Image (tube, rainbow, N blue to C red):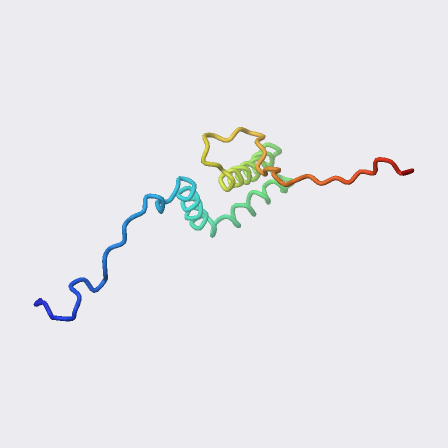
Length: 115
């Protein structure tokens, strides 16, 4: 290709510099991975939950199987909740409060009614 006067040799312009701050954080990567996993599992979740709920409520099923089904439901719910609210820190400690109470507290108290 020959040089033509008035035309740029690089029509796309200068390549953008990669800013190291633009790289995804560990939290971003975890969230993307969780979303991809949830999208793959989503078509089967309703059927699995329904099956576990049916076993749990089946009067003819043994108490052991009913308890296993209930445990499966509760354990998966707990894991998904922890994954969604997982922090960048090390392991979550059980019983850790998820929501922070950073809001200011406002209280109105009557000190002396007679004055």
